[in-house]
Length: 183
Ligand SMILES: [Zn+2]
Image (cartoon, rainbow, N blue to C red; front, side, top):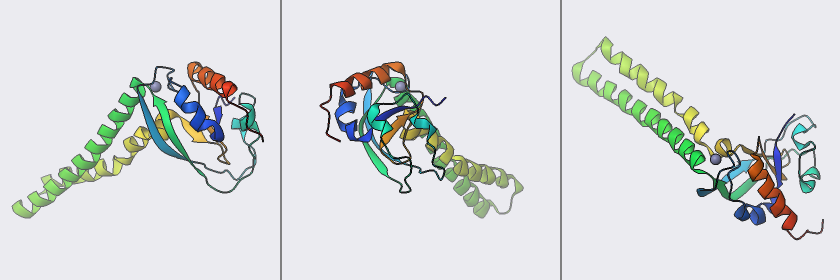
């Protein structure tokens, strides 16, 4: 069963400032981040993510939608662990990219200065491999990955995979306190 926890996009701006637990670990928020989430409409009509365990508003979102929507998220809480994980992967990504580039350029320069040398092929290939690998840690550092959030297929709700109970409880109680919008 999918354990995604759904937040209606219409309630995000009212709910997020009241929530001070991270969605992943349930730990106190250490930093707030802004990012954009893109919906990925599926070709099949079914949406198992919107099963029983969702807020009422989220259940009303249409199942079929073909347009990709971008949801802007402001003030999403991240705990210390989330922030550290993100920094760590960003660091690895930049070491791969810049380190790879430096190796490559160094090998090219050395080859120009010293002439043909089979030994220089190793840093050159290593540099290319590192630079090519750099997007992987960069993706791991991305906020959608760190927050485990994605939009529902029609962009009407933000779904959090395996949301921590502390986070879910806070969101639920905040949503309950919101004035109900007509429709
Ligand atoms: Zn966290």
